[in-house]
Length: 219
Image (cartoon, rainbow, N blue to C red; front, side, top):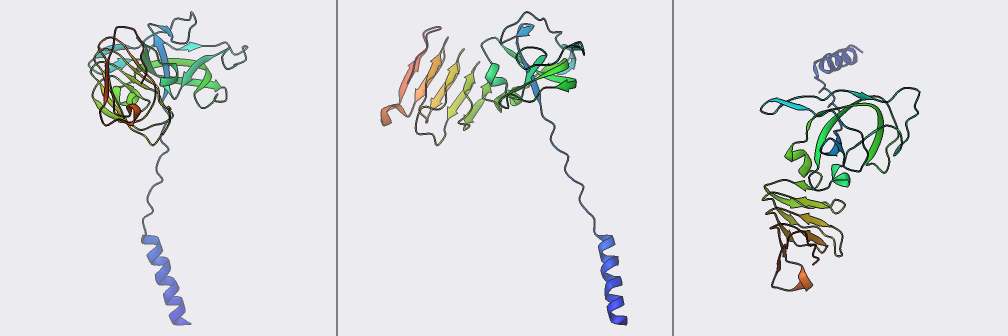
């Protein structure tokens, strides 16, 4: 009996010394608002208050905008719309801003957007944040997401490489960007952009195409 009590006591003492690792904090979702100028890229006449850069990479948020409480939020109708995937609303000359919201929201629509009652824009999205969604503003990247289109600008070089056997990724390239395709799909080339299609008719010789300004081409 004494031995059993001693064993239990020792186990309790040992357990008390075990350090429990703190629970990892849930990663906060980043919501974006995509604008052309100071208005929504999807249309509309509302003018957003934009963040201002007070020093390099330091931003003062824009003003809060709100919908009166008496108005019921409705997706695509009433509310300020924000998205977790800026590529869905992207277009040339667009800017994605990191958005902050307060108060009531609608349920997400197709996991791409929600309507909120109160919003302000914190800062322009960083290049690395946009690259996670298929928007490349420079640098060398490999794109492997079969569900996201590719947008390439500046001197970005983007290699599209997935297991998809059929046309599944649409690419848009402008400025002096380069798209290198290992995966079938359509490509729009503008300005001085270039397509190197390594998948062209399964040929050993790649197909290289250069843009004629604002003329879309396909593989």
